Length: 163
Image 1 (cartoon, helix red, strand yellow):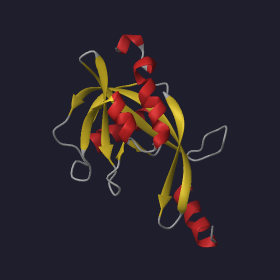
Image 2 (cartoon, rainbow, N blue to C red):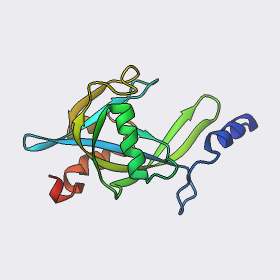
Image 3 (tube, rainbow, N blue to C red):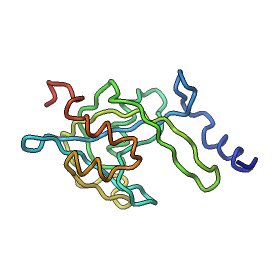
Image 4 (cartoon, rainbow, N blue to C red):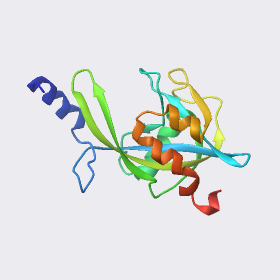
């Protein structure tokens, strides 16, 4: 890694919340889900530049819990609202490549979000696509692949009172 990459990596992570145990930079995300027949469906969105299927994710927000920040990202990126689980489903490695900074190895804290409202208009609808998928299809398509285990375990991870 060049000094150039180190400098931009420093800029990208300046002031970013870090995991208290690992000191790695932390982001937050939501897996939007809904009941469908006898199973559960997951809502995936495309990345703005990559077009790959992923979940809504973003930065921690000042004076908001990571769960509330994940809920806000789901609104902005996927156009959904609902009940977000205050306790994370899990934390996964989510490296991301940047042109100027190289790859930054983020930790992604993922919350379940039971969708109660799907909006016709939302802030990033011109930049992304969204699609409801079965658990198996979402697991095949999602990036980063570290999210697969959380998606496959989702039916068992959601609170019994949310099923």
